[in-house]
Length: 19
Image 1 (cartoon, rainbow, N blue to C red):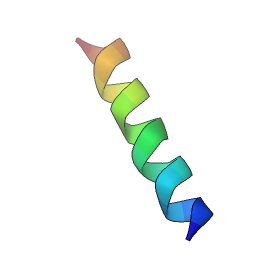
Image 2 (image 1 turned 30 degrees about the vertical axis):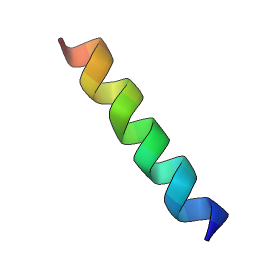
Image 3 (image 1 turned 180 degrees about the vertical axis):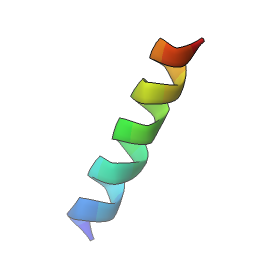
């Protein structure tokens, strides 16, 4: 379950860096 949270967090960070 922790992996899903890490993946979601990573996606959020990547999306933030993309913008």
